[in-house]
Structure formats: structure tokens, C-alpha cells
Image: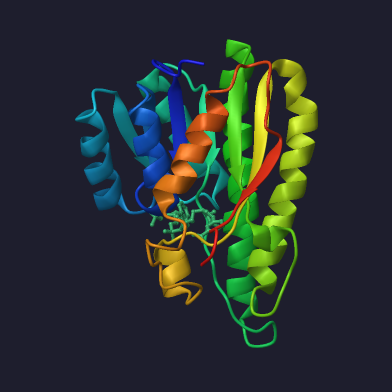
Length: 237
Ligand SMILES: NC(=O)c1ccc[n+]([C@@H]2O[C@H](COP(=O)([O-])OP(=O)(O)OC[C@H]3O[C@@H](n4cnc5c(N)ncnc54)[C@H](OP(=O)(O)O)[C@@H]3O)[C@@H](O)[C@H]2O)c1
């Protein structure tokens, strides 16, 4: 499918996986609405995307605040002229032992990773319903498929995203909205490198552009086909 002229909102689009997805989609002619908390990053990425010949705009908000999410998404929809694609990518990884991590940190991981996905999906739904079609990519993680040491909050948040996304898919596919649940393994980014999960060695470890090409190709499939879920791994990290 040709994606040219479609409008995509990418949460957490100022860096990491979100920035790579924004760039891959802009290279297909997709207009981009970026979101994030760091305005400098968003401004820089928006300028880079515009240089690729597409419309690019941004909204600054935290995904854990429903009112801010709703207002930000409405602004982007107005500026772009509708929303065809949502990439629910914003997330935080806080790692540590269950009994050492503060309750506040634990709650913040759930609020950002789970509620952020819920708020953004709910905010874009009216635009997709009105258009009679849409695509929502929910970025979970392999951590959501199986918990492990030092990741109780992160794994629980991503397991919940998988479950939320499955329910969303079952309800919204009837309105021609494809809901895609992705569970990537470790990819070189601030989160994984600062979190000590990988050294990010590009000879071996998945890079954000690998993830972005995968998302782009899933979205380019004929609308009658929907990849409901998928994982991506480094071959031999
Ligand atoms: N990297 C991996 O190994 C890996 C593996 C599996 C899944 N994932 C998932 O992929 C997604 C992107 O991760 P990444 O590796 O690119 O991480 P990253 O480099 O740390 O970037 C995180 C992004 O999320 C945004 N963000 C975080 N908290 C936010 C909040 N409260 N409100 C709005 N935006 C917020 C950040 O934007 P600002 O800084 O502007 O707020 C940033 O753009 C996450 O959902 C992560 O869980 C990553």
C-alpha cells in the first residue's frame, strides 16, 4: 500500500525508536505529528522531517495526563488534517529489584507505559472512526511476554499493554482499524543503553532503524491484511 499523504502521530517521537519510525514514515511521504516532553528534541526532529518534503508538527505533553493527551492529539489532528496512523511508542524503563524500587517509581512506569497507550488510543479513535479506517501500532516488549528479575514494573506495564492492545484490536477491527501489538526485544537506544541492557554495538544489536523498517513494512500491507502481533530480535547479540 502507498502511505504517501497519510497522517501519523508518533508518541515519543523526539528520539530513539519513535524518531526512527517518524523518519521511515516521512520517507514514504507520510505527514508526521510528533509528541514528547522535550521540546528541543521535537523541534529538531520536526525540522529534519520537513526537509524530507512532508508536513511535520509536534505537541509537547506527558502521556500520563489524559487531559494533556487529548488536547495535544486534537491540536495535531487539526494541524495535519486528520489522523490515519498512531504509533503508541512513548515509554519509560525503570529497572531494579521489586523491594528496592519506590512505590512512586513503580506507579509512574505503569502510568506512563499503560495509561499513556490507553489515553492516546482513546484520543485518536474519533478521527479514525470518522475516516472509516486507521492503524494503531502499540509498542509493548518481550518483557511483557515473560517477567524476570529487576523488571517487575516494566514487565507488568508491557504485559498490560499487550492485553489492552488485544482487546482494542478485537473491538476496533470492525471499524477497519488495524491494531498491531509489537513485542520487540532489546534495541540500541537511551533506554536500553542507560539501563545497562546492551552496549548497543551496531554490528550485532538491533538498531532503531531496524524496528522502524519493520513498522513501515507492516503498515504498507494491503488493508485487508493485519499483522496482529510480532516480535523482533537481534540475531546473535
Ligand atoms: N529500546 C529497547 O530495547 C526497547 C525494547 C522493547 C520495547 N521498547 C519500547 O519502545 C518504546 C521506545 O523506547 P526507546 O528505546 O526509544 O526509549 P527512549 O530512547 O528512552 O525514548 C523514550 C521516548 O518516550 C518518550 N516519553 C517517555 N516518557 C514520556 C512521557 N511521560 N510523556 C511523553 N513522552 C514520554 C520520550 O520523550 P521525551 O524525552 O521527549 O519525553 C522518548 O521519546 C518504549 O515504549 C519502550 O518500552 C524499547
